Length: 199
Image 1 (cartoon, rainbow, N blue to C red):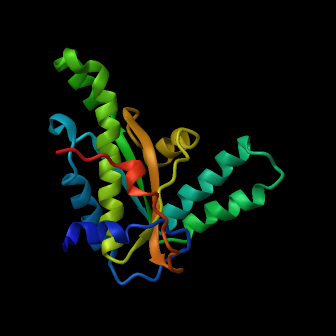
Image 2 (image 1 turned 90 degrees about the horizontal axis):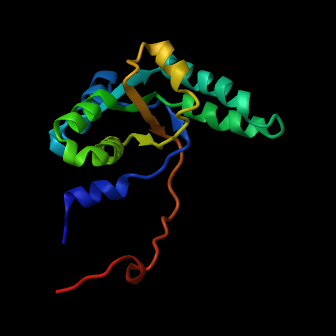
C-alpha cells in the first residue's frame, strides 16, 4: 500500500552534516515551519507550541552561546569534540527553537481542574508532535535536520538574547540545512517485540 505521509516520515532522518546549500528561500522555510506547527494536534486545541526561528548569523549566535554555556559545566578534557559537534549545528542554514507556553498549560489546569495533572504531559506530547511535524516537513522539502536538547542549560541566555517570554519553556532545538552527507541504513527491531495485534 502506498502512503504519501509514510513516505515523508521515512525521509525524516538525523543529519549532523549540515550546510547552507539550499534552494528553498528563508521565507519558504519560515512558512513551512509555521504551517507544520499550526497543523500539529494539541489537547483541547490548546495550541501551546511556540517557536523561535533563527537564520544565518542569528543561528550561529545560538550555537556560540551554547558552546559557552556547555563549557561552564563540561570537563575541559575532551571538550574539543563537544565544541566541534556544536559548531556543526551552526554550519547549517538555521535553527528552530521549540517552546511550550506554560501560561496556556496553567490556564487549562485552572479551567479543567479534573485534568490538571495531565495538561503538562499533554503539552509535552503536543510539543513532540510539533517537532516531528516540522522535521518531517523539512525532510520532505529536502532539508536536513536533527533534534537537540541543550535545555535547560541554555534557557536563560537564549531568553535574554532573543527576548523570549518567561512563560515559554524551551523543549528542543532543531538545527537545519542542506544535507552534506547521505544516510546509512536505519535498523529496526523485530515487529513481534514491538507490536501486539488482536481481533
